[in-house]
Image 1: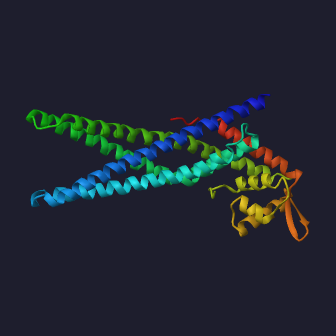
Image 2: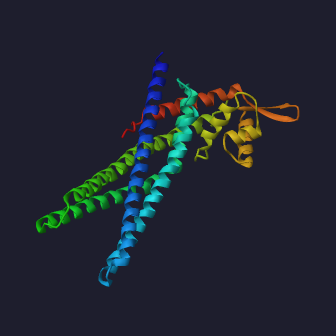
Image 3: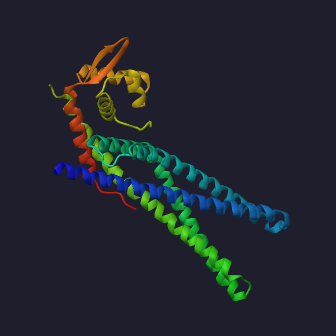
Length: 214
Length: 91
């Protein structure tokens, strides 16, 4: 009876964690998609501006194109990386979805596979934490610059307020998400690092069990 | 899925899978191992007495023995405890 209750709790914990990790990955893909859309839109605007720009502003336009290209590449890499993690995670999740009740064996199998997934994707997750944090900082800086420009243009009376505020809000939201993602990935990392650490101890116990004379 | 698994995790996977008699090809496919490594693991488990080799027709089949029950049980107990006693991930 007590064992059944323990199993149910572990099952609930696994299912809940998997649901949260799935949500985190979906959010990351959406974040990467919006960042990519921003980069492509900026790229298009600046490439079109090449025709009409005088030689003085040409350097500015080229630097904008360069930055947009870098951002587009990083966003694309971020989407692909997240999709890879998600696909492997989905393999684990999909295998036993039909079952209403997990046996001890099924639960252990999931734990083994989730530890394996973390071992395999650890470097990728670390890179994703770094990239999304940098993206978050860039979006917040962008929101700040746009706010300063809006304030400056308001004083000169040369501004259409609605699109400017829209742009600031989008950048602000993306900046906040850009900080939320790495912090959530870090929480995931901390949980699994601890499990990995404990698994070394478990490994020693299993090794000594195997060495015991029968 | 080619996870980075420890040898003990692979042993457990093989022993659980071989509760019913399996050929080496089935073990290799299920546990996602290459044939050389897969054979090494199976040989080790056979040598430990955790697997028994039988022949059906011209096929060699491997089945988990009662001697492996202790290993399978301790493995599950330790891994379930490991998960249960660690902090929970939430967004």
